[in-house]
Length: 115
Image 1: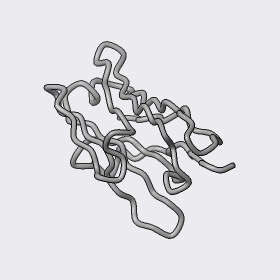
Image 2: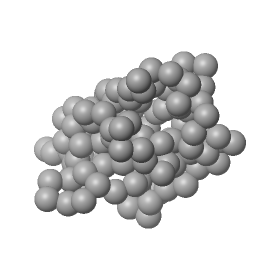
Image 3: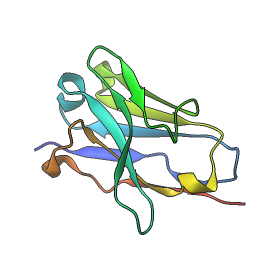
């Protein structure tokens, strides 16, 4: 059974930085395109960053230039480096394949940007 476990969230001040990690239980993070998603209170979950098997990355307009997605296939881990954080980045962050597979959703990790 595939498990994706997100970690690294927390409370940070505006302008601060955080790095999220997504650890996969198997080789799923190696063989599929992976992505980070987020869901803010009262909003739908949205895709914010994607990394292909080739390493090619794409970003939503809202995070481009501030967030960086990367992967370490040897560790079955995907990362999201976040900088210049804004209150509007407050959300639960999830990783999954892209397109997402319903059985792969984990618990997510809460990121709160507030002074």
